[in-house]
Image (tube, rainbow, N blue to C red; front, side, top):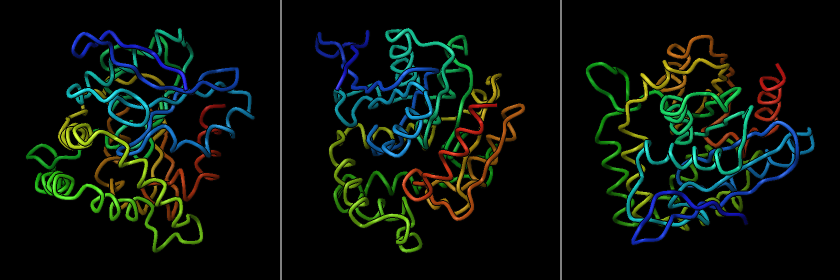
Length: 278
């Protein structure tokens, strides 16, 4: 595992972010979802390396093998972490692929830092532009849902993520596409994350308004979503992102749940490749 150190310090020590870097060619940077780690991309890494791309994945602060600071789980800080990665690896002509919560990093990064280093963006099962239901965001998610998630995590994190992990891939509908073993592996990955990070990120992905960020995106963008997503339904997020991002391309994968990188990885890879090669 490789590491970068950020300019952000905790108790005098810089925060280390774990990353992997494979292959050669145009760089693809994959940003994982909550509550997993970069290990969720195991079906994408070999596919794109074998297609002559450079594939970079990393663990968000608080998750996977990255450091687990007590604070900094907001989109400005996490976009700053992404910027540090791109700068320290001196990447350019990058394809950013953000899954679920990672879609927030993509949109906030472009809003805060521009697209000088970025060629294209992908929002996959993404939470952007805004999940929380408000007067200006009808048909969103009621605040009680996010508070319920935090209560469940606080009461019994292991049990909460057992149920969440099954819904993540719509296991009962997709037993021919994903195994119980994979769901159990995802559960173990989720529990390796910092409890504090897991809790704080619920507010980040649930209550951060990224509508203006989406409108600031001026590069080719793909909205990739499953039409059977029970975690972040297309109507709640993906449809609105497609409306806000000028010229965005939309690809809906029929029957796919939130965790489509596990259940529909062949369709995901082909959709990504088609978009990247345009």
